[in-house]
Image (cartoon, rainbow, N blue to C red):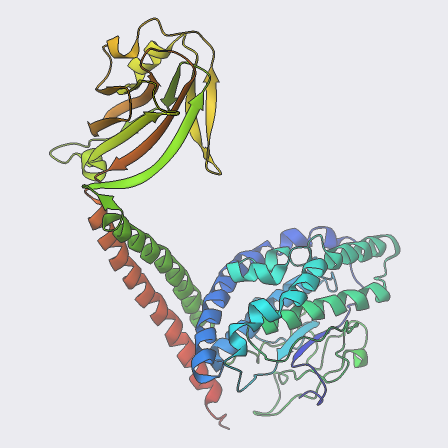
Length: 500
């Protein structure tokens, strides 16, 4: 255990010697498998942190099984960062495990907090930690511990911030001289230690505020790290606390490196077997998917009820303008299907367009025509095609030309039309095919400025809403079960007495 004055997050590392002059050039490629695995582990970390948040809020304790898992994710991330751009402090490939590995030169230990404040959990991870986030953002170059809330923490740690910059400088010096500068190593370790302390605080693992102190070097200033026992130790035997400065060059800890540079992974997240880790990750993926399904289903229910007027669901209003003689939509293709089921009609039903000139007073024309016929009518006409909407503003593709040779109402190409002064309503029972919507001034003049409201009956929407809600509940229940079972099993094994 640590000394009385130590922070409950302890980070230790030993600088390997000698280090390869060139291996650091490819480490970012070699750790890609780790980043793939960590992407899923951090997703599980985020979901389990939400569970821990409510547990702390209700009972004042961080569930032990979840705590062990989340510490393991931080430990795994720290080893990968120490190997790669976060320090380049070792050439030994990081092990794929949440557990503490005595033979690996990078270590992380976080004391289990016991009781935690129910009040602090509401504000510490976002409000109280803001000053720390600013500093960590400077160190990492990305505000990483904001980002981990969205499942992308590790990917930017040690990017273009001070940590990555100094680690890169040290690597270049290593390439030239064959030696890693010890002063840079100490400084880089101090910044990494700061980042990990803030990570644990933001992850709700401690109520003790991270100190505004750069504790440099591989060893914690007050306290030692409790490592798991060697493989040949007697059951229950504790390993002496390890102080990095006591380790000879090329060694990493009391267990010594194994054949691959890694000692036995016998401690760490007790009970978190590979099967349980996979179960928790799959459960987290299902929970995240369920949130999307439930949110989409709720939105569909809202659109079906509160947002439906006169049988139509309002899909939005937008103003479109062009200096030319016409506005055209992009071609849209609808599929009716085969047999007796008309897919397009079942999904969209009837579309209603309300079109008015802006400012009012100018008679307008709106029509829907087969895409080929509309293209022939607009050939040689100065008009604009609406290509999309960005930031609430439409984007256009302009077409050079002149005035139309035939007034729009006289062209015999339209499936449905509406024309006249004031607002016009165009109602179109959706039909399969390739179509284009065209809006013009009724007299074919330029410029054209119209305000368009789109609505549709969307007869399939209630069924879509019901299906999404049912699927969301199933995914949530399945994901919760896949998380709860391994957490419960790991907690029971952690609490079980050691026999022998």
